[in-house]
View 1 (cartoon, rainbow, N blue to C red):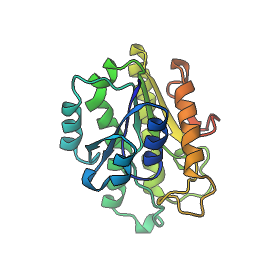
View 2: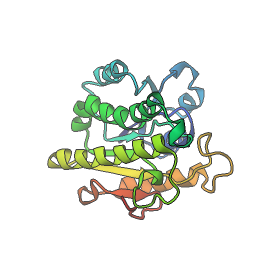
View 3: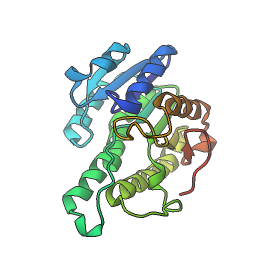
View 4: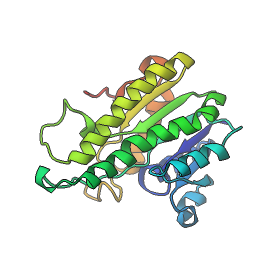
Length: 224
């Protein structure tokens, strides 16, 4: 039985990941900032752990609790969205919040969980990013904090792929699409079930040769 850890698993894409993974027999550790309120996550059969990716002490505490365990696959799903305004509307706090949640947090989670990931047989790390983090695809501008933080996550993953690839790890960034969740809105074109089914297919099929790459949920390679 494989063990997966999914951050931000109490709603949206993370919750659906927990549902589909437990349905196929995987052991799932799902994190939430308020685990006592994560009733839907708990109902999947997942083990619920507290984690706030913006707090290094919370990240390190999770790593300490899981020391001695084995994790086959890490999915860094926790993140924040929102488009924001133009450059005149930006503040340092606004930008730093995006970086803290969408880029710095996932990297600290990898660092904290490395002993457990090294003990696992899967050796896969997947980060849920966004096509809005693609510089080549940016034709509309705006969303400064969101775009830049996801582009930063993509670059951090590339460095992880190069460093951890020497140990046999496969590190990916995955675009889930515009998904029907609280973040994406009910007008989004992609049902969450479909997006997650695709994300899992990409992760399952990924090999070390794919490490460092940027994939869509349907398996297409995406521009940087």
